[in-house]
Amino acid sequence: MLESCQNAQERWGGVHLLIDRWLQERGELVTAYTALSNASASAVDTQGLQRFCEILVDYVSAGHFEVYEQLTNEAKAFGDQRGLDLAKQIYPRIEAITEVALAFNDRCDNGDCRDGVSIGEELNRLGQLLHERFELEDCLIEVLHNAHQQQAVAESAL
Image 1 (cartoon, rainbow, N blue to C red):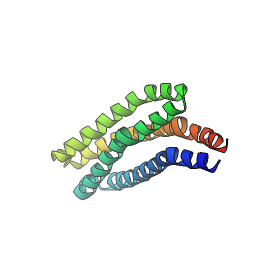
Image 2 (cartoon, rainbow, N blue to C red):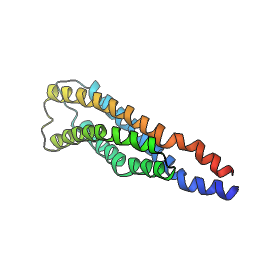
Image 3 (cartoon, rainbow, N blue to C red):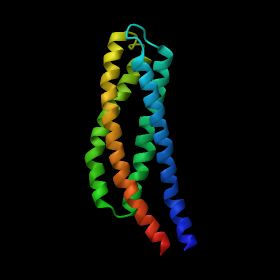
Image 4 (cartoon, rainbow, N blue to C red):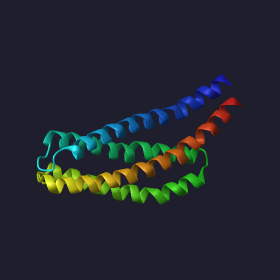
């Protein structure tokens, strides 16, 4: 029984830690976004904008190259076709939001984010899209990971 429990922890504990780190980074992203959106529209906080963009790129990259892959692998391992079907429906929207976020970052890298009014409008739009993305990601975490935790605990108890 102990060995089964350890195997489950080794197998899925890493996914949990990965999600925890990613959600912590999400919090940092929201904090950086809030600081920027609360700044004066006439003056762009270039350091704050640069920091926000760094966190933004790290966050969306971790989602695509680490978290989503691990969640999908976990669902496959548990034979969760419903979860995999949901992921196929949700991923295209997340990818579209990622493209907007990366385009925003590229414009800022090119120095095209210096106009305070324009950047304020873009940040507002990006904030709405990030909020949507967070809800979609939470749905994926719920369906592709949290749903399997009880099953993993039950299997390790056998």
